[in-house]
Image (tube, rainbow, N blue to C red):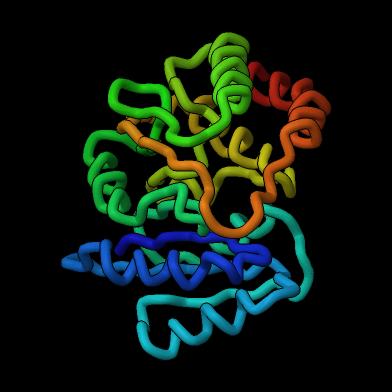
Length: 231
């Protein structure tokens, strides 16, 4: 079974559109579940998801009573996932649900399959140039200091073999948790594959990603990341 883990925090403007796209675009010729982790939303996110769970049994809702951050939402969703394959993705429609099966199929000869903006055929659409530049530079630096051939280390749209992902430690509660997971796979020499992703800028709702704040978190975590990678 494929488990799709989707953290959601104050996403009432887009979560309905996202779940409608899942119902419409995901082929379900193999068992599949969508685990939405409502991370203490203060809007109607929880109620909207519950409306879908009543109609579509393959959609499940897991709740945090208070906001705990992306890392803890992923940790909760991963623990709740029942599938042999786990896909993580955002709820804001920047990650197309139609790619889920392709990502899962990429695990035929890999332990992690990454939807990558930085391989041939990938890229970013309608994203401000300065954000593209910051992202590219950060990934180049990470590639150098962590000594890996992976082009898009910060992508949040990935498929994993559950047996490995469930062992990966998630310490951070913010976006830097994505790097913690990647470093576990790199450190343990697990096989990776990248497929192209054309990421579209968010059209609905408000992004929770703040570049300066996130950059400072990565800087503060860098020593820990390096110690873990090279220990």
